[in-house]
Length: 179
Ligand code: SF4
Image 1 (cartoon, rainbow, N blue to C red):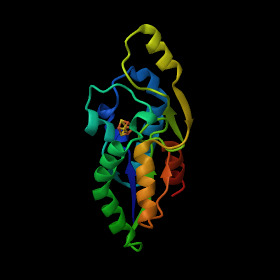
Image 2: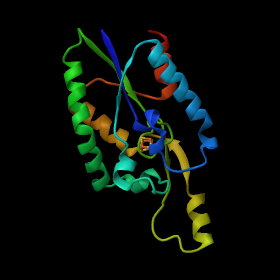
Image 3: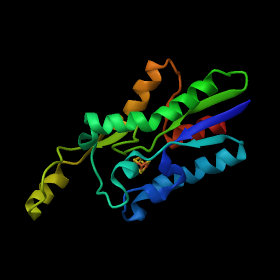
């Protein structure tokens, strides 16, 4: 039986992430390392999902909040990016004797790929003054909920009757440890 996970793109390729001081990502990178070690140790197969933000806005993008991506255009692009992967999931799920998809791994806190945690704020318009910049920064909140890419993924999974959970890196590591 081949065991498979689908991972958010930047779990395998951190070059796709928003440019930032990576010292702030220490905790996330620790979880990532642990997950990768377990994947190799337990011979889990890995399929990398596309990075929606990199594909839509490239490497020079600012950090965003969920509200900015929660629009029909972004959702439609997410659906198109996910389509070939959903077909792969359907095919693997049609052979339960041979394949088991353990789940999709999220990146918690992301406005796109978060699952239990995402960031929100009423961000829009020109940032013309320092006061406006501070006002925007002050509106940033981390909150329970999914990013837009994961939201689209879960509704597509439901529509296709695919019972595949979305799990954080930490939760997936616990699942793999128990195998
Ligand atoms: S959009 Fe998703 S895959 Fe891309 S950098 Fe953000 S969390 Fe990672």
